[in-house]
Image (cartoon, rainbow, N blue to C red; front, side):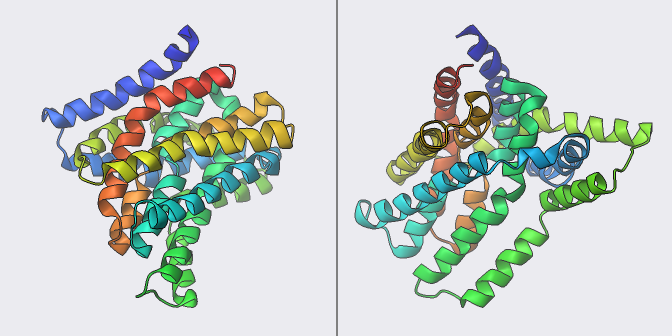
Length: 311
């Protein structure tokens, strides 16, 4: 138990610090978006590039881990749409946004810091192999489904064009692509370049956690907290539970490797669910509430998963 607290307390203390700093006007609220942009557009691409270049990244693409992670996400997405339509009586577009809130993981701002803190550098290759295609796979899934279900939807070709454009302009993809090219040609970094990438990589954890804490000030509980609470439980409990069953019981992946994918699946919903909802103007309040509720609840649920996974 002490080891679990040792992992979680610094993580959520940084989130709390970010929240408090913005809440009490010790840090400008306008600066939070800049922090998150720095992490997503600069620091994390450098981390991806450096990790791929310096690791045996080819062995990290383990379909026994990646497959269950995404299958679990798709199952949560489907269940979310069904619950949205059948239980909460949401319109079709809102039910897709609800399902997306149940599926999309905060892999970068929360996932990377916790994975690094819990399991060290050994977890990075597998973690980054999931992060590398996360937005591409799940954003495309969400966008295509939304366009097919809402009455004012665009054509499939137009939707795929937009999805491909969003993926192609994602700096995380650039970091991965550059890292793979550099690894293929066996690029050797000179010391100043190595130092630069190391410093940028080290900035990811504190800046990401402080930034997501500050961003929580934007989200307030509204009348749609009930579907958001259900979406949070699906993201924090159902998704990693599916991944656990598939990896451990079905595929018999060794726990010391499977736990990387299972714990990453247990992360709260990512900020992109809010971006997705506002882009389509569907389920915005549910997405905002899900980010707030899931991030707060994750302080407990992640501790439980660390215990189950033998932390």
